[in-house]
Image (tube, rainbow, N blue to C red; front, side, top):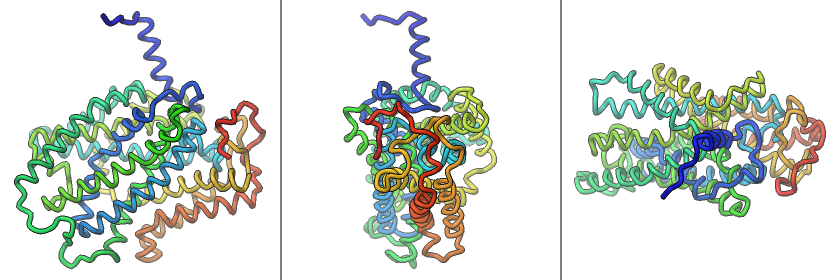
Length: 468
């Protein structure tokens, strides 16, 4: 017989689950208690999003299967390398990228810039995924107005996100088998009834070519997505058990990138070429009927609960930094959901290209600053403290090393992305911005001699948390 906890103990457990988020502080050693399989399971909720299937379908139909596949491989490698690096430092320090940025070259207030833009990215993603859900269900039950579906799917994720990372782990474990079953059913039905003639993997649209401008265009599309996945994993990697550090860093840093870009990308290429349709929210409903609508809802809920989680952490960080406003993470969960609904109703999908372009430039440049600061500035050049400090009393408000590097690289990268520096740089703009950010971080750290990294040395950092 299962023994039930007294009501007071249940309420205490609920409060503890909420506190487990550590939105404004590092996860202490004793708080790093989650196994790598559980954390990887949470991140796979993002990796199985329909957006990644859609990108594979879109690229294959527009530029050919080979170019799409090469771009997916490129994205897997870049995001995997950056993801492992970010995970290593998150697990080592117990900090996510928002908190890491404070002592990683930006200063206490300087890091607020990154926190706000990062949060806005996740709000945008919530709106995109919610719009895809609403469109798919509207395809099946068109008598319900699409605005009503947008409001419904925007609000339903709030209770699913209320208790933080352990609740997310349970939801992703429960939903994964159903996701695999519905995806497999779609594969089987299309395979059995396929009318496509020829080899899917050599498909090229009329007038297309393998390599050249077509491949560059596909890489440009992928650059808008690689940064978000590589940075997002830091929110979860900081909970990795100390004894599972090595396997945890690899699994959480690389496996989600492998799934979302390579596996989901290949699935998208296969379906897209077979069906001649780029939107999986449409073709899964056509294949599976109500099962397709359920599949779309399931995939988008899996990613949106993680979008809300990361956005709530970033917003909590920003408003605590700038305004000393600390209403708790759950307040920001509701705020994010409402803001996403507003964007959905405003037609966020109509501006998706421009939004993803800027996001790709910003996120990859930010990741470059953080990794350069940790690996080159702190470890090799021995500039600044050999750990990430996140507490205000130890930090300057602004550190020009990260702030200037990020602003300059984002301005130049955005000019390149919108075509002002030629076709080649337009398609590799995010990577170009990352290189500029990396080099500037080194130059400015040497020029300022690390003066703005720390007001005073902390005496309570354990050697396990040293990153250099």
